[in-house]
Amino acid sequence: MPLFTLERTVPLPLDEAWRRLTDWPRHGDVVPLTHVTVLTPGPTREGTRVVARSGIGPFVFEDPMEVTLWHPPADGEPGLCHLEKRGRVVLGWAAIEVRPGPGGRTRVLWREDLRIRFLPGAFDGVVEGTARTVFGRAVNQLLRKE
Image (cartoon, rainbow, N blue to C red; front, side, top):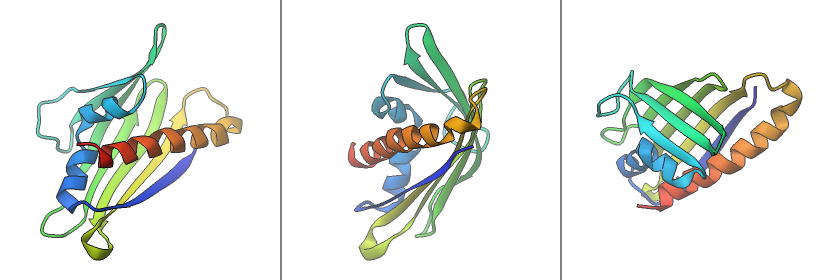
C-alpha cells in the first residue's frame, strides 16, 4: 500500500491554491486520459462524490471518491480536504492541505495512500513511483494553470 507525500510552496494566497486544487473537473484537464465528474450538486462539502475515469478504449477504469473531510482555509488558517477512494480497482485515500508558507506564499501538502486491487505488494514501488510522477505533474499544473 504505497503512501507518498508531495510538497509544494507556491506564490498564491491560501484560498486560491485551495480553489485550484479542489476544482475537481480541472483534474481531468491535467491528468492524461482522464475525465473527472462531480456526481453531487455543489458546492463541495463532506459527502461530495467525484469519479475520475481513466484509460483508453477497453482499458478504462473508474476511481470513485468521496469527500470525508472538508475544511476550506479561512482567516489565514490552513485548509484540509480528505477523500476516500472507493472503487473496484483503486482504493485508499488522498489528503490535500494548504497552509501559510514563508513570505506570504502557500505551502501545499498532498498525501496519498494508493492501492490497486489484485496487484501484489511486490509492485508497490512501481505504483508509488508512477503515482508520484503523475500526481506531481498534476499538482504542478493545477497550481500553475488558471
